[in-house]
Length: 127
Image 1 (cartoon, rainbow, N blue to C red):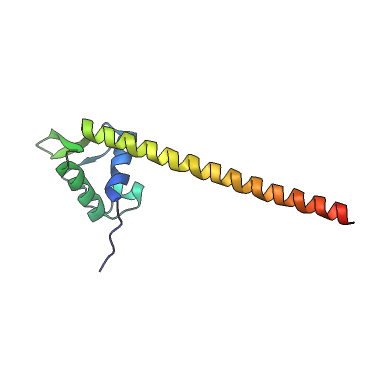
Image 2: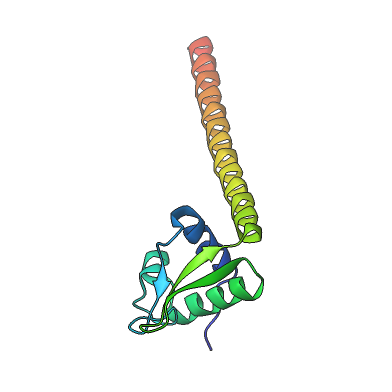
């Protein structure tokens, strides 16, 4: 039994948001369920994870498939207004997490530097 990665749909939504419109499509030659789909390869996920995510996004009206050619069956993934707003919020949260990690790292360095300076001062006083 395979363990599903949580929130894969968020990764897919953000990737579409960052490169939309018209970057990723499905066609008669390559479906979203294919492991070799560009989006699956870029996100390092399986085709079935991509297919499930695309279905989830469409079912929840975060994306819509924009059919370009009925003859060749090709469609492009477009964000809806709701999908755009959620992607924007996810991007904001991601940025805040990165900024918090930077601040935490800076604080750690300051603590280490302060400890080194304190130890150095104590050594100078004792010797």
